Image (cartoon, rainbow, N blue to C red; front, top):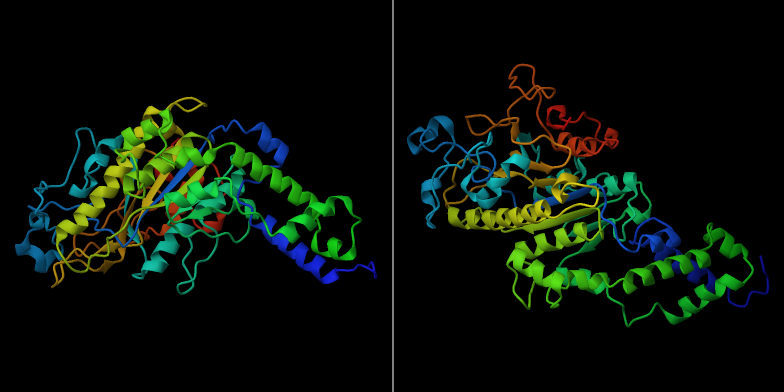
Length: 458
């Protein structure tokens, strides 16, 4: 220890501040020189999109519909299922949708997304084991049952980035969705934003600087002897790491990535984005279509590998009309359809189109009851469904089922997907997460279950 160090306390504070700054870095795990060489931005060979519909969706309107000619009001006491398609006031066709060639039947809210049946696998009869919003959401984000309301483990996006270590500037973006990291370096953390402007602001050169004293001393560390304080608090050398991180951030800012997400700019690329997604010239861009455009931009430009997004909300409709829930759901599914359209028509540098290289998981925290309550809404229901699309999964198929009485979770042989009421098991969120990880050849052992192998592309 240097006994005559004039400012030992401030140096200790400085080092802790610098270490915190570096630990919060969200701009990838690769060294600056490697990053600079990749500054032209190359899309990840495998991309992932996690699409959250918040509030608990009605599966009779989405991925687990029922024939209203069979499940009639007269049979409600027997079936405890009331599709209620005749209650819509917007002219919606009362029957579920089955596109020509599709093995999947969709509820009327799926709308334009149904045309992409040949990219889909629908999983029905998922037992959420909880009716609490936060628990159900965190369960699906991590694939681990929360402890009370507290999340356990890392987000699936974090797990993917942690295993693959992609050479992209912002490996993971979480837009309006919670994100967790319990075992990887800070470079695997998601950049969390709550609106599109947050992303623009984050990637824009800032007029504000790091506290002048801290920055001055950090920069000075490069030319000073290492003290005991520095050795104890900076195993890798905060000063050197700060220089590297600072240069890396500057490289990102100089790359003008903020303009890619500022859809109001009248550039050729942004004009095309607005046209593709039907966005207004001046914004704002936080509609479902605007959020879908942000996802496409992040993947196509090689800015991110994983994007998790809260695409649409307003689904916790215990009260009010059936049309309200239908409209909110349809808004989300139509936006998702635009995203798939865009990814399908965009060539990927590794061959094929972006949908050939992108896996999409669409989920909600639970479903709505198959019976309509006294206030013309639906309550929370354990039996859920989800949608898998794109790379690594089989298409145009349904796995699992819900029962024809009260839409209870159906027991299945998880190795085949066949109904097995005697020896079958429940499908749980961890099975879905294991399947997503296995679809990319990643280690899924953290889920402590096997993936749903019939869903995996061969």
